[in-house]
Image 1 (spheres, rainbow, N blue to C red):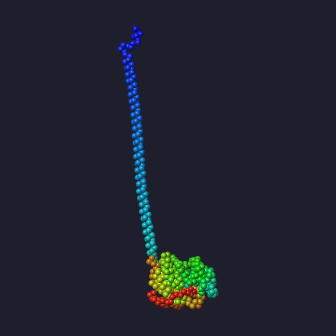
Image 2: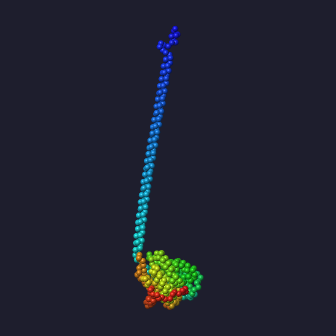
Image 3: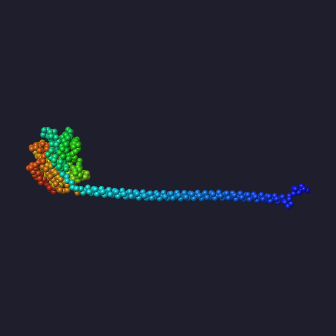
Length: 439
């Protein structure tokens, strides 16, 4: 009995029920545990999501700030570029305006200077012009009575000794250099051919002769080489030369003097175009005062021929202020044409071409010009100085000398008479045409 009581559960206890309750309790614990686990996992997941969301918002805000900052910087850069560009443009415009103003000021100053220079004080120039200077001899001449003998015996200062003071007192002395300064032996086939050593150019320098015409019938007596040699000798002596198509412009006391030399003997009026061209040339070179020298006319004729008058007047029509000529070996008259002078023949001067010419009268023609900003004034101040080609009586000692007393009066009267014999510019009468003498 007792054993049966031990195996039986207490009174009222149902084992099956207890098992079911235990199972329910276990199930309840399991559910509770699962719910807690789920709640825990849900909480953890929510936390992570919140963290991710916060980080996302943080980076988004950060990116926005960066974009805003970059945009701000970009705007600032754009503004800086714009203002810099404006500043550059403004600076460039200011520089251009300053440069323009400076250029305008410089141009105004230059114009004022030119106008001031144009309105210059009157300048007075005295020119002396003389005739044929043959500084040499012909090889057929007697040496003892030749110009070369005088040079060997007396030196370079001898020849212009008696007129040097006159030439030194003027502003420019012009002569006709008739002959060659050469060692060439290639003599042209002609009656007279003149030459001398190159050192003879110093005769001109010593005598205060500054310029010479070389366009004449003895410039090539020993061929083309002799002419080239002559020009070289003149250059070396400091003598300005002009003639043919070679012109010269000299600066005398600030005035540009144009020099033109025309050889008329062979081509006569065909020289008209050359004359026009050469005058135009010196004008283009700035000449303010123009002197034209002609080698023209007929030997021993005392009145100019038609060609001389035509060319002389044309020279003045084209702009020459003074015209002088030579070749006749005698004095011819002076014509005043349109207020300007044409001295048709100055005769010989220091002339080695003849030791005993029948006519030894000559002259120094001087004219004083007044040059202003308006050009050469028409005051026509002239001075004729009567001379002899020799200081000795009866023969030529190659030393031109001013005449005095009755001799001076006689020569002046001769010039006046021959001037009165020149046909007027509107006259159809004229003397014979020029010869073609090359002697």
